[in-house]
Length: 82
Image (cartoon, rainbow, N blue to C red):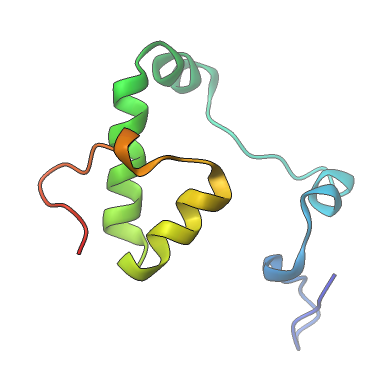
């Protein structure tokens, strides 16, 4: 685990196993999880929106590959990447 100069732990260098050991969890509230689980199209639109609005386009392919997300499943919304 890396520490910043002020002693804070930086997330960039943590492994999932380390996060689990620290009791750090992620996820959606149950109602949101249920909504996405029962509406896959909504989930794919959310993926496209998150990538489009919060991630530089040159990183999209790397993130999709790491997460196992095929590009043809993503609904991009108003504008396609690139």
